Amino acid sequence: MDLDWTIIVRNWPVLLSGFVNTLKLAVLAIGASFVLGVVAGALRLSRSPYLHYPAVLYIEIIRGVPLIMVIFWFYFLAPILAGRPLDNFTSALIAFIVFEAAYLAEIVRAGIQSVPLGQVQAAISTGLTHPQAMRHVILPQAIRNMIPALVTRFIVLFMDTSLAYIIGYRELTRVARIIAEREFRAFEVYTFIAIVYFVCTYAMSLVAQRLERRLGPA
Image (cartoon, one colour):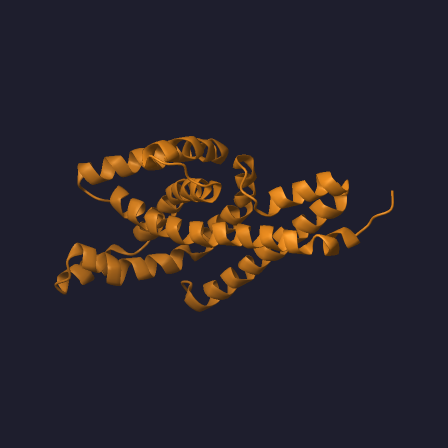
């Protein structure tokens, strides 16, 4: 069978819309999950059992189930909790944020613990409270140590957005499947999609390497 790459040109607007939807889901999920991950990671290190154990329970439960299960949970549970139907994008976004934040929390915990104890003691001795020391002294150093692991998780999250197709969200993979089934050109479509994912993840890797050189520890 001859290959017909013109199918990509003919369906370019639809593919572009799918890519935009994928990018929107990934960017929002990365930003929100990072914030939640920082909070959960800090709470896990808390000496208060009322903060420590709920954080541990959340992290361990979420890390113990597959992402696709979390997506289904929030697809069916979120409308019940909200008291109204939620669109596919919102359900998928909540699932990705909750799932990725659990993994990012462990990265944050390890990053915070990598900061020398002397730095923490010096910050406290200057009169800073523990939250102030965490925000101004500990976290900036921890984030520099976490850059490689963080970017790896962000790349994984970007690729995992393809799982949102199972609840009907029209991201890049779902759009590609619709085109492939309609045009009977699965090889060309999925090859193009694979190239798009590779280019995006490779670009993220290059950015990570540059950040490591500029901000990473010596």
